Amino acid sequence: MKHIYLLFFLCLLCSCKESAKEKIARLVREWDGKEISFPSHSVFTIQGKDTVDFSFADAEYKIITYIDSVGCTSCKLQLPRWKEFMHEVDSLAQGKVPFVFYFHPKDVKELRYITRRDAFTYPVCFDEKDDFNALNRFPGEMTFQSFLLNRENKVIAIGNPVHNPKVKELYLQRLTNGKMPSSSVAMTDVSVNTANMDFGTFPQSEKQEYKFVLTNEGNNLLVIQDVTTSCGCTKVSYSKEPVRPGAPLELTVTYEAEEKGHFNKMITVYCNTKASPLRLMIAGNAK
Image (cartoon, rainbow, N blue to C red):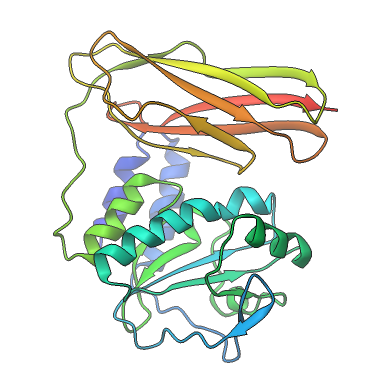
């Protein structure tokens, strides 16, 4: 499987600047086949309270993710999406693939609150001393802080499966030995009414909503494969039905400010177009 993931990321990010592609290529080369080390005394708990006996050493495959203390914790965690992905993997692998979460929290109370709010009851290590990162020196980019490991704890895939459906597909293909059906569909073209929406200044308690309109400008059906947001405070609803040529599709974006201040949030739309992923932005100032 060596070099497959390097090729995938280069193709996926062909629209990036050359320097960005070179950086991604270097990171994938560095981590492909690398053995991940684990702290000798990791304590796993449920929602930061109840300590549990969590063993994953003998698993044929394991999925690990590390979350650092930089930036918006809720934005990075995306626990509801992890729960969905975990359920999908469990159904395919009969629950034999453990998920190993190491969180280095800047605020333990906040992290406990988020796990309770999102009803996340899977074992998590609150790595307050950042021992896991100290052993492995993970990349600073969130994209490269999740890994699929084999029995020997060597990296066989890299990337965040809940933030990128293409990475998710790679994980599932590897876990099923290539038996997972490909999601590839015929390409089409799409236009967007606007890629940026500024809500201006509004009271923090007021929910904001905007409808982005995507129009299928090509000759094939437009299929939305996934929509991700940069923060749990941003929700997106849309019809899951394929869009006929010439027809529009509304993406209803709802934003609920968790705190006061200026914000810029990204909505990433993965679909069967050459321009995919589409990146939509919302901004504003919650008072």
